[in-house]
Image 1 (cartoon, one colour):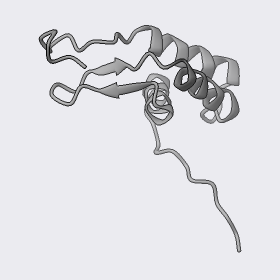
Image 2: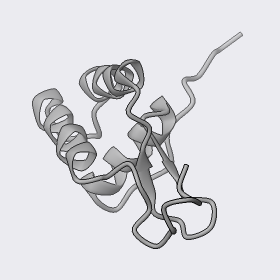
Image 3: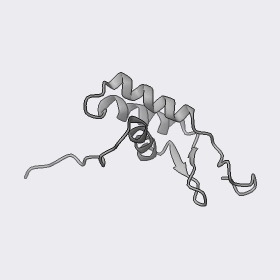
Length: 90
């Protein structure tokens, strides 16, 4: 039986790809109310995202560039939603 690797959906930008990888690894999640990306502050999930980027970068993108983009995107995401009141942000 032929086994195929499940492919990620097509992306339009490297940043979009990196966001998808971070979500897949569990390093970020969306605010349920507003949709903003939030950092989970999970070092293991961050490392999984970097491993995914290194092992399976997008076509025509080097592993080093893919890892750098994942780190850049992660660095740009905070752990709170800018629209949520502090007591609702979790």
